[in-house]
Amino acid sequence: MDAMIAAIGFGLVTASILALGGVGFTLQFGVTNILNLAYGEVMIAAAYAAYLITEAGGSVWLGLAAGAAVGAGLSFVLNRFLFTPFIRHGTNLFGMVIVTVALSFILQNVLLVVFGATFFSLEMPPSQSYRVGGMIFTGTGVTILLIAVAAMGAVHLLLKYTRTGKAMRGTAANADLARSCGIPTAHIIDLGWLVSGALCGAAGVALVMNYPAFTSSTGTEFLIPIVAAAILGGIGHPYGAMLGAVIIGLSTEIMAGVVDPSYKDAFAFAILVVVLLFRPQGILSEVAAQKDVVA
Amino acid sequence: MSSEWQHYIAVILVYLGVYTIGSLGLNLQFGVAGLINFAFALFQAVGAYTAALLTLGPPDEAGFQQYLFGANLPFPLPIIGAAVAAALVALLVGVISLRRLRRDYEAMVMLVVSLIAVSIATNAIRLVNGANGLSLVPKPLASVLGLNPYGTDYQWVFVIITAALALLTFWFVRRVTHSPFGRTLRAARDNEAAAAALGKNVSLLRLETFVIGGAIAGVSGALLVQFISSWGPGNWGISLTFLYFAAIIVGGSGNPWGAVAGALLVPVIFIEGVRFLPVSGPSIDALRWILIGVLVLLFLWFRPRGVVPEQPRRFPAAVQRQDSVPDSVEK
Image (cartoon, rainbow over all chains, first blue to last red; front, side, top):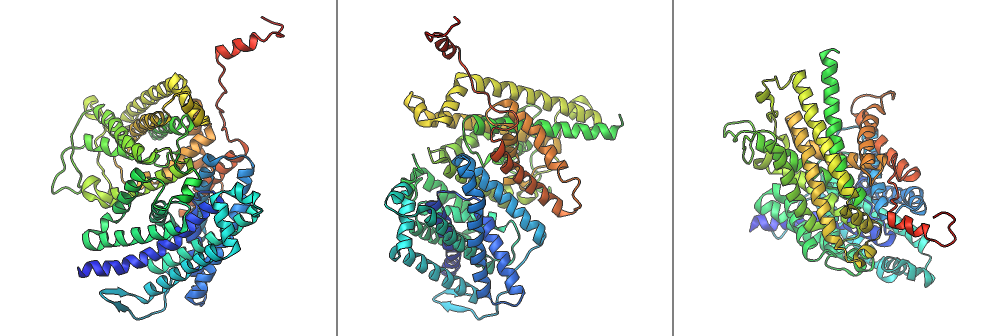
């Protein structure tokens, strides 16, 4: 039982990182209608930016801001100069997946050439541990939880209470209808790349805060649980991704803590299989249904 | 020709043969049926692991590698077994993921399945020796023919086996592509709703193609493991799948000749393309992947149909109808 409660603590931290990454991923797909498989590489590019800032003497918070900025900027630029031109050129959904995968290979290996094949770790300031019930949180764990809660709160406020956020939801639900209602969808899609990119960058920085070491391929590895969380919650649905992140984060860590750590990924896979078999559109399926994800 | 050169050429020929077989299998799935199978390397791996297990003897408790079982079967049973096992896994994966999902969503699911399979093979050591992989897989026919399995003569025997299987696969894939089955697949690829409206069971057709392509991938994996006699998780990452996609996009999707062209061109570009760059060490490999990524993007932009484009097909009935147009001068 003690192992279980301790595992829940770790699970909450993992769920926080997954929520940042999953909400970014799902929002990106929802608003922009592009399934960006280079997402993991953008995450790691942001992590390298945070690493450079902290190595230069900047604080972790400055590194986080830099990571979010790099994630937002890179996503925006990639869309403007790669994805949009390809779509205008007539590349279909079929081809766009290949475009994003080709891009993920290019980005990952550019990072490998620039930073080399060594492992990096983000230097975190020393801090005490906190005990809550039977759970133990490191200072880093608390930082990550705070980042995730703040970001989720901000996303909630943005989508629920601002005109921009409502326009984003409208664009995600039905871009054509949104356009005929006078929403400047092109502008909103640009914003969608910026916001989801910032979340992606923040997720990358949070990920390497928690990881002992990272390298250029870490993003691809972490893409599995992020995608699983987004699919489980219902792709395109930000609250679904939050829910999916909590389910995947808690269940994989409990599995690792109580049963066997080597079955962590297998368990995430089992969840994914069950979802795809019985509810391929995910738990909260409104956006997925609008986008004909499941015919 | 010196024996070193012979050895070198034989190795290259075997690799090109394996690559050609794999490309033909993926082309059937991706080019003809429109399935973005980002788990392609998984089926190659299933074939390779199965062939290795069927060729190896029973595991020794004190041995340096752990695995499920060893059947010690003679050639060609391990290759057939590999095709069957890969087909079964393809059936399983297909039933889970080919659920009439949007195509990019389906591709992402496949990618995740592939990544997770690598992690399971790495962590479940008892299955296929985990991260270290299987090694010392006996080579087919070496003892029967009384040849040294590492000698040049044996290499040429293997080239012949590979070439025979590649030709067989080409013939088979060409037959499938030109059959009514292949025609229906292309119809479903180009307009799913229309094909379904004509009473075609699109989901079943796609699943069947997925299984056939999986079996072909299994054969290519089996050949490869029999040749290099070892196989581990490092051999079948997502990068391998991407290399096959690159071959099909560069070569031309939808027709077997394009798959062959890509399978011959892409490895050459991959290996030789960075020859004149002033770099060395791990960067050279990274630059290779960047080059392949850029190549794929350039082809998608400038020549999305590849070096050998799929030919639009004309059918006798359509020609007749054209001829019977009243103001046509010729009869």
